[in-house]
Image (cartoon, rainbow, N blue to C red; front, side):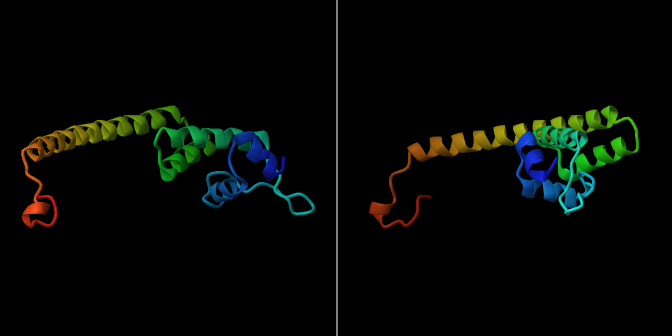
Length: 127
C-alpha cells in the first residue's frame, strides 16, 4: 500500500509516517519502480503499536527499544511491563506533587480572602 493508504488505515499523516521512518521506528519500505514507498500490513500493525505505546506515555526512545527487541525476535512483554511499572511510579510521584501543590494553592487562596485590595492603597500587584 502507498503512504496515503497507510495514513488512512492508521489515522496518521503521511508526514508523521515519514518521521517515524526517519527515526527508525518503522523500517524503510521497499520502493515501487516509480519510486513510491510500498508498505505492508505489518507496517500498519507496527504503527498501531507505536500509537498505543505513545498513548500510554512511552517515549519514542522507549518504543524504539521495544521494537528493537521485537525485530530481534526477543520477548517484549516483560520489557513493556517494566516500562509500564516505571510509568506508574512516575505518575504516582506526579500525583503526590500535584496534591502538595493543590494544598499550597488552597492555603494561599484562604490567606488571600483576608487581604484588602492593595491597589487603592497605592500598592502595585497583589501580594
